[in-house]
Image 1 (cartoon, rainbow, N blue to C red):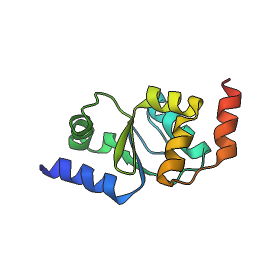
Image 2 (image 1 turned 135 degrees about the vertical axis):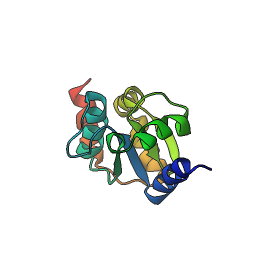
Image 3 (image 1 turned 90 degrees about the vertical axis):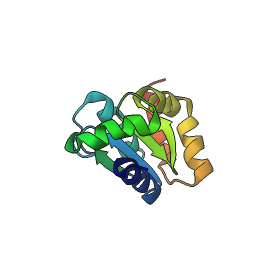
Amino acid sequence: MTDVRQKIQETIDATDVVLFMKGSKEMPQCGFSSRVAGVLNYMGVNYSDVDVLKDADIRQGIKDFSDWPTIPQLYVKGEFVGGCDIVTEMTLSGELDQLFDKVGVAYDKDAANKIREANG
């Protein structure tokens, strides 16, 4: 395993929810990263953010690691969930809630429902 792959794996293993994104959860640097971080922030999910703009090796490495070409990328309990479109669809369908419930990730159920109501 290369150093970059090992670093990515260690990051994913260290926290239940990890978002590889452009920017930070407090200051996203692209619309797609902003959308996913916004969902997680609004739902009160405790997650780690990794700013891929700070490290070109991580930026390319996460794409190779997941075999997914775009950023952001969300990992929950060590498993790749998807990027912006998938996370958005899962949020609106309730699948993200179900995943969090299944793996024991705490989130604000009322906030999740409000997102769906606002987009229904």
